[in-house]
Length: 370
Image (cartoon, rainbow, N blue to C red; front, top):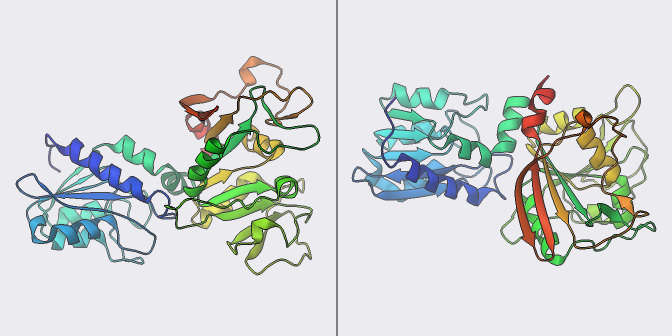
């Protein structure tokens, strides 16, 4: 493998910018960008993976570069694929185009690739460098990598609360705690997910659509509803747009539902929904990111059971008082050492509200992989 060149990071950063353009459309595939540079150091081709089943980033970049790719360098944010899936192997396309060098941000842990793409390039005499901007490349595909490496999806819990940590008045009224700007921002979290997880309480209380309303998002995540008692009715708005839905039960119920609604049985030894098993089942269906938008009990359970990787907390400039519903249902901790520690990643003012993103994955990584 070759030594790194002076401008490798610059070209790879551009490839990462391209990869990010597919963040709302590629699921369950990873986000990948590619830049082709000719022998003179000029960018002659760019591409990114736009949708699952369509050409990969390398193909678009090579089409744009044409013969100018020969003898040049390709910068790819993820190891080129080496197998026939819904599209031909990109490693073969890079070899056939006559690239002299390929710079890869990171190896692909997906079992059908897992180093084979790099090996194929090396066997064809192509110089390969690996590890340029690797941390940034991992960040853009956190969910995909977690599913491949841990067998669990990335779990993001969205919370919206008043400044005193409340989510609904005593009578159940909750619209709207946050402003229109914050509610619009939530759409970006939903759009990047493969599934939206909620509970029957939320569906019954709010009758939400749980859909994505972004012009740049051409894909709707599936909806996963925990409804052990069969309380959600077929006319709920969450079923109205024909997007596939999963009703999670602890036993089969004889409830008639629309054809696009599936029943999934997931129970623990106590007859309750086993959340970790549910997440594993979703990962087996190639869902790599789960967006949790639920009431205080379900959201609290996901956090208490150490299944959350990230919290998106929208704090509104409102005060709701002690009789209002709490943000989370958590156990009564007796010692400070028991308290979950959240690692603050960002603080963003949005209108009259504040968006806080906390990362829990570094703290939970050991516990989740046991």
